[in-house]
Image (cartoon, rainbow over the protein chains, first blue to last red):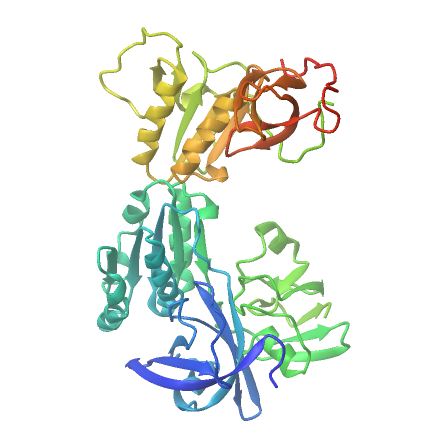
Length: 318
Length: 195
């Protein structure tokens, strides 16, 4: 049996797209169909590498209408905390994994007159599930994908099915050659902006749009979290009565889970707010997109999936 | 009976330009920006202003200036609204739209703005002028304009309607429901409430 809200999935296909880039296709391990996923949705995989248990969120790239399979694309990260290396090197066709059913924090806006999508690198993944949905709705869209020069053909191939009649461009010349302000300034009224990619790109897009008068409600960001780690610290879980050591390459949430405490979480990327936990003592280094600036300044809550202690010790109400 | 505790009743406040906006268009139902429409210390020069003269002789504008401080005068409200539709269709992100006038005017404006893709974050309204209401008869769908009383006879089906605070942003109208549905003929004395 699978825990509530999860299902067992079998790897039906692994397709190498480029060096360090693989598409994994899953099917329900016990037959049947998956639920219809939301556009821009993600799933959480539980990866068991020996004694090490990792829970990682991945955007679905298969069309929302496709229920026989769920596809994800995973980039092998050099400083992987284990998830991408495990998927790339240890998972094989036929393996069964535990997957939490999809949810979306990055939906398509129903009232938009036009959709402007900007992806950076592997940040293309949630946009790949938006495109079939936009096409099915007959919506007007424009997509710009920023890419390393050598990966331009890979992204062009992934985007080819959606390119007919719509403006889709892959930019391989780096951020400096991409006229972001020009692009954002010429968008018609009623455009919604979706951006997914490395944090500096998302921050730059969002700041540029705001400076050009875009209302914040029309700027949608999908972060896959700042997983760059940081200094180790000790977290005291007051209610559970335990202390956990959070390592350099580990998130607070992962350390809590490793200690056997069931902590709330959903996106694991600092976007959804599900893991919000009250802080009793200690200073927080906020890395999430959920709390407001005021809440961050108050320092009374932490998003355990991405944020860390700014100091040796943090006491939380968990 | 004037406060019926209904949450859909829109709220308005004096206008000041949204600092996050790039261009500010203020649309006025009358011939000039009415006193009280702008927040304290705000000058009309911060906006491109559209007004309605309610007469045929309006000054021609050989060069259409679309900048803060420019004023464009229209003959009548429909004249202005149709120009607004065209204008919004070619506008870019960053525009903020403001309206000053009566409720039916403001919400007709809202309908046009919404169809053009503007959201509530991009719109600001100040209610000035008469409080008279546009009433939508829920029974026969007829709209009766300029209602100032608590009970009104529907101009479509003749039913005596109770004027509710229940407001439809889509129809830019308040809801009117038959007041003597339970006991036919038992119609309370209308009160003058929305002058």
